[in-house]
Amino acid sequence: PTPLTAPHSAMAIGGEKGRGKGKGGRYRKVEKPEELASLQARAAAAEAAESTAREQEYKLREELAAAEAARNLARRREVSAQADAEDARRKAERGRDCMKDELTGLMSQLASCEQLAKEQLMHQAAWQAELDSLIISQAQAMEQRDQLLEESAQLEVEQRRHAARMAEAEAMAKKLEEKIAKERCRVDLLKKEVNRSLHE
Image (cartoon, rainbow, N blue to C red):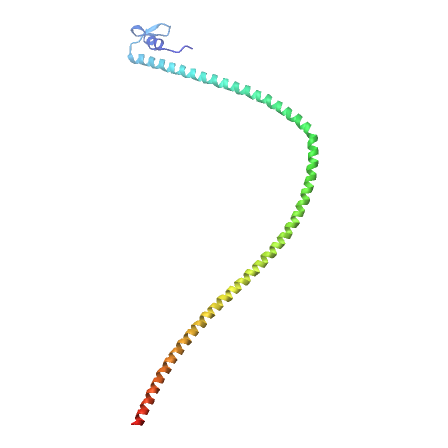
């Protein structure tokens, strides 16, 4: 459909001297401006609807083209996948015998690995037993060390007490020595007084 343009819409609707098209295909005279404005609005709405329809048609054609391209691509991929699957099947058939030989070799290797694993478990058990023994010995040594540390701490306490007693005894001895010295001085003075009295 051909879009409505200005000459086909406004001018055709307005016409010369305000003529309008009637029911019988003839133009009738438009007497009111409101009627002319309504006709122009309807023409503009028709043009907008036609433009929207064309845009939708264009989008649908683009979507259809994209869908066809995707379908063709999917067909090509399907053909390629079928060819790849056929090649893979042939390769699998050719490699089946080789896989049997490899499986036999792998089974032999698995048996060897299982034997090695058993031996490894035995060695691990022996190592674990030795480690447990070392841990027990270490725990006993740590216990003895703690006991020695406790005894050493007690001896230090006793040594401090003994040192305090010795210091107290030394202080008492010093006081006694001072007291004895004072008493000697008194005795000496008394002796001098006695001697003086005797000589007089």
